[in-house]
Image (cartoon, rainbow, N blue to C red):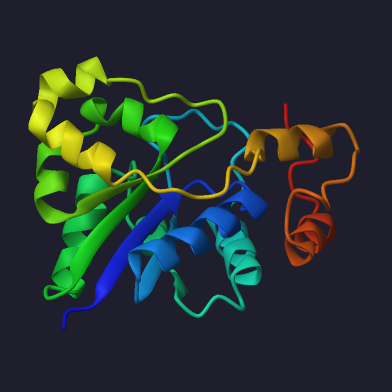
Amino acid sequence: MSQRLAIFGGTFNPIHRGHVTVLAAAVLNLQLDRVLVMPTAVPPHKSNPDLAAGVDRLAMCRLALTDFPAAEISDLELRRQGPSYTIDTVRQVRRLAPEAELFLIVGADMLRDFHLWRQFGEILEEARLITLPRPGVELGRLPELRAALGDEAVEKILADVQTTPLVDVSSTEIRARLTAGREIDDLVPPVVAEYIREHGLYQLSV
């Protein structure tokens, strides 16, 4: 039986309780053997003037998921030069694990713009797209994605939208609290809060 392997990418700036909760649910729902938790280097679709260094985001992911046996923290995108295009990541993981059943986990907000991703059709040829719901994000009928992929492909993607807890936490909120000098212990695992304090991260965020 082939290994069920998922890619779970994001800025993780910082990783928070919401990430951990939905990842645990997805692993259970999909019976995943392994998840590559992969901080992005330069996100092509986001502007992050307060993006913490890759080494710090990797460290926080490792701390948050220490007791998560299926999680493997990957620096694959951080080691690659230039923007973090998902198609390049998927191809690289496929080369490393040619026999695996490959899944790509994205948030509902990302799915709405999936038709804008570089070579989105080829991504779907290599990996099964798994969508995690996010608070306040309604997918609707996704007309732009239907125009790009066709109704059948979109219905298949929608059938793989997961039922996971909706945890209303965002990295943006965490950084805003830190800038204001407020506590974040209810939003991130304790070890991540301690790391942020020890390293003075996000204190000068704007």
